[in-house]
Length: 188
Image (tube, rainbow, N blue to C red; front, side, top):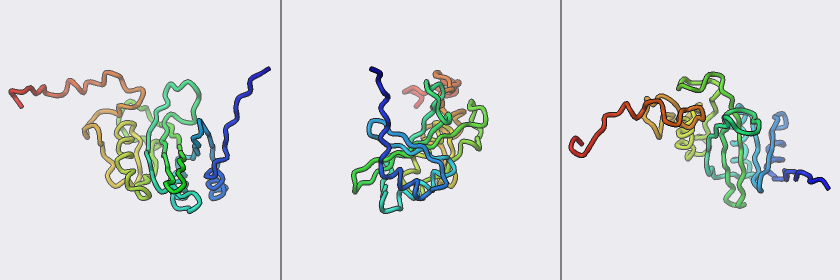
């Protein structure tokens, strides 16, 4: 008897809604432990999210979170090195849906220079709460968001020399600790 790999249950209604609204786009869909994820090309993610929010059949009226992921060294192949994941919630139907997009850097990721391949359209015009979440992704991973109202660092200082959640960033830092004057109780 051979074990068969269980097939994902891809019958979430939002998959069909998105495919119906954007028939020319190529989507990927996954399901893991009951959580459905729609994988969208970076240039189309804003339009798809706008549809999922405004269409009454989908009605994802709440943005739970926006998260950035670095897949460097991941044991299985991925579409791109970085991913941005949008967690959407329809509060009326008690339904959660994930939208993910992958980005591949076009420049070395050791510094802070702006990489045009690591750029997405901001969703702050759809959900105001995305402002700080996108700032955190920018600060920690270096993914920039076009049309963001205030894209600046949020957890590190403005001249921080890198993006510390990139997996190629050294665990001990790059000398940031040594740049600060030690302040003790007597000199404070």
